[in-house]
Length: 76
Image (cartoon, rainbow, N blue to C red; front, side, top):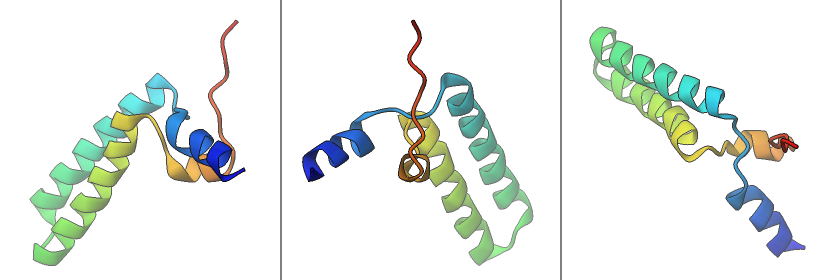
């Protein structure tokens, strides 16, 4: 049971390509705005969150989407 859960959670991409690109672009924007406008401790905190969001786009897997059972539709 645990092995099938781990295969499902860690090896199946659950983000479509358009959303992956959108996440990467938004993450770059968040990091840029964080360093351009925020003060010392907050710019690093917001940038780290943006990088985490962008990393999910690069990998193609979102853990929170997997928790809620989101899957990509298979094309015929």
